[in-house]
Image (cartoon, rainbow, N blue to C red; front, side, top):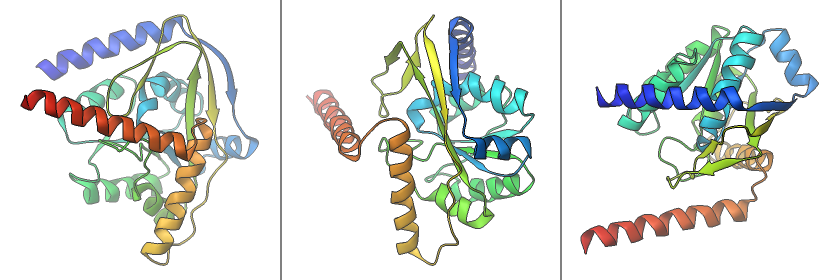
Length: 238
């Protein structure tokens, strides 16, 4: 009951914000537009801290404008349950699972979902981070399906930053936003763990560049989050 109420409150809060936000521009490459118009299969990716920035955009752009079915992967944790309920209120049908709990089952479900012509959405540093550290699941999925990955993000003129493990962005009312959708990023058939790691690093750098974060800045943020968590743990013990 508590999670249901929190999800309802979060949904109403976001809907109110989205109602006041003005979309300035959608940066959409022609190659990506072709994939949407021709209903070709692809995977969607975004960093976990971008979730509040793109929920409304995902519904209005991918689902309503291009009539595509988007299924995000959501964690089986309590936080994942909250996120699942919120995004379900925006027309998406999440697949439950993560790299820690139910990951293999969820990955198989996403493969089947993608091959059925639907769009699978993954936050590759979720559900618990480290922030901006890309996990290999999406690389494996792209390699198996042969589908490219398209990453996207929303850049708002005004926003809050929540003191969470991913320093999540929350748009402020009456802000303006530009959405950036990437070129298709192709992953070849992988030949082993070393090959997987090479392409994991390549796509991590690709996604970081899209949000304007350098590898050094990403590592500094991870360090900041670790130190804050450690300080909080010591404070509880004392």
